[in-house]
Length: 331
Image (cartoon, rainbow, N blue to C red; front, side):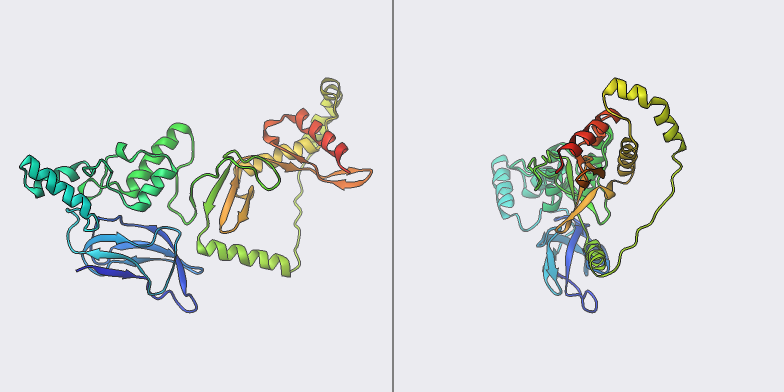
C-alpha cells in the first residue's frame, strides 16, 4: 500500500517552503529514515525522511515548487526498487506483449530491460528532475550508464557527466549548495538594449537568501548608509604614467589618465568575485559574464558617468578613448 509523503510542520510562523532538491529518484529503493527531499524555508533547510521501507513511487512536486504544510509531495510504495514503478502501466503492458511474442517469461524480460536502464520504447529511466537537469546542460541520458536500481540514471550520474564536460571545457561544475546554476538566459536584449547573448547566468536563490536580500534592501531604504575608504599606494602607477604619458599620447592620440588603471583593477576584482558583478531579479541572482564599467568624469556641464561597454576586451588606449568619446557626447 502506497504511503503519502507530506510536508511536515516547518516551525513557528513558517507556513510554506520551497522544494530544494530530491535526494532520491522515482523508482529508487528507500529505507525508513532515508532523506528523500530537501525543503528550503526563510529560516532553515531541512530534509524530509522516509517513514517506511519501500520504493519512491512518485514525485508530485518538482524542484523550485512552493509547498504548504501537510501538502502531499510524493508517495512511497511497496517493493525493493527492482521492479518498474507502478505508475508506468503502458510500459508493463508493452513488456508483457513483447515477452508473449518472444515466449520469454515476463519477469526475465523486465530484468533484461532494466539491465541497461532503458524502457522498450527507448526512453531512459530517470526521474523528472534528473531529466530536467540533463536537458539544461544538454546531456544525452542515453550515453550515461545509470548507477541506480535497474540501471536508472540518477542525479549523481548526470552531475558526474557535467563535471567531466566542464573539465574538458574549463567551465565550472554545478554545485549541490543552495544556489545552483539553471538554464542560461536565451539570447535577448536587456532593458537598456544591451544584448545578453547568453552572457548572463541565472542562479536560483534559496528561500533564506531571498529573505536576506529583502532585509538588506529594506535596511538600505530605511537606514543611513555609511561609506568606507581604503588607502591604496599609487606610487608605481604614478611613476609609470609619468614615464609613458608622452609616448602614449603620441601613439594613441589620447592622454593616459588614471581611470584606465582603475577600470582594469575593477575588472580584475569582479573576475575574482563574480557575485559582485550581479543583480537580483525576482528570486534569481543574475551573474554577469561581461564587464560594463561606469566611470565618473567631470565635464563643463557637470559630473557624468559614461559606461564603457565590454571594458575587459579593451586595452588602456581603448578605455581612455571610450571615456573621452562618451564624456564628450554626454549632455
